[in-house]
Amino acid sequence: MDFPEKFDLAIVGAGILGLACALAAARRKLKVVVIERDTRPRKASIRNFGFITVTGQDREDVWSRARRSRDVWREVATKAGILIVQTGQWVAAQRPEAAAVLEAFMRTDMADGCELLTGTEARQRCPDLQTSGLQAVLWSPHELRVESREAIPLLADWLALDHGVTFLWETAAHSVAPAHIDTSRGPIPTGATIVCPGDDLVSLYPDRLARAGIGHCVLQMLRLESPGFRLPGTVLSDLSLIRYGGFSTLPEADLLRRRLESEQSELIQHGIHLIVAQGADGSLVVGDSHHYDAAGFASERIYALLLNEYAAVIGHPPPPVRERWSGSYAVANNRVLLIEEPAPNVRLVLVTSGIGASTGFAIGEEVINGLFH
Picture 1 (tube, rainbow, N blue to C red):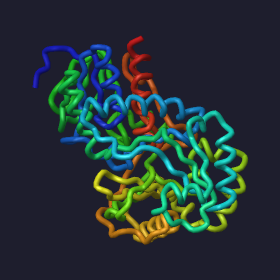
Picture 2 (picture 1 turned 30 degrees about the horizontal axis):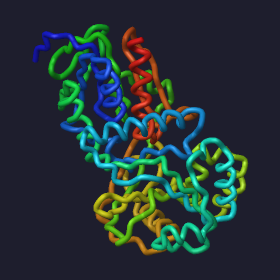
Picture 3 (picture 1 turned 45 degrees about the horizontal axis):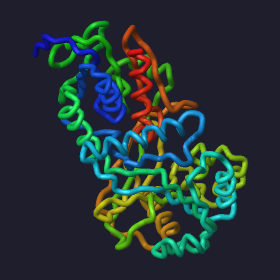
Picture 4 (picture 1 turned 60 degrees about the horizontal axis):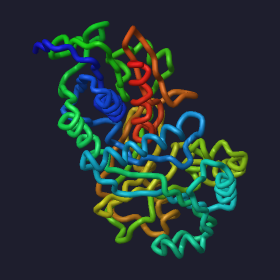
């Protein structure tokens, strides 16, 4: 296939980060092409909660990007026909040590707009949650949730229709040259290139990714039938307080961590921290576990641990399972974002944590501003 016109920017990868870069470039009136080997987005960007998380994110690397990305999600959702299926976050503290972490968090500026509820106040606000011994609940109004498997394709369709972004689906990018990309459809002329490989660590720049210590994280997740009531927001539990940097770096988290290591060592071993998110049809997405460089085979033991934790936090037996699946994303030690310049006018961009939905739009703006300053 011949491409007689040169694109201002070619983006390899149609996950959330590639689409975020496409949006930021299109807003600059650049001529953009997105190259994707699959027929539609199929991997990390749709195999998740669709949870745009602000409260509890690490201040240094994530929090400000999450706030900006949340604002872009709100704007884009209206225009692209993407349904916001849930708002807010409900962090349920079951232990006094967890309540102490939430109290400490409320003394930081990152708690702006949040409320700390007593167990009694929380049960009055949401009587359907029957967790026994609830110590406190942090309510945050800042979060949004979309159904990723619907939202990401709708975002791509909107970029094509309203912003004139060209999408080349079922097209493999073989190599990146200074003025073009060699693809399975032939060379595509471009003035600049952004490679957003997601969890594909072998197709382009594998040596760079290996030197950066990039690996895989595999998750196990479930969708349950509707429990017959609405959750007050996406629900998290004590285990999340030792995982999210905005909580886990507080001094008060040390006591909670030691107690959880004693009481829930198997869950910690499997990287489990409970998230329960509800869809428009009432169904519940429940997860997740974290295994690094694992083969990707699902374990029924891990699903059982997730469902047991669900029952402990929600206070009801779990509804029947509708779906099970594994997710995957790229990870690296001591970093959440990789941006490299392997050649002039080329950027290699990778979110090395499970925060693509939460930070992708802000990162896309940063990359485009740096490339087209």
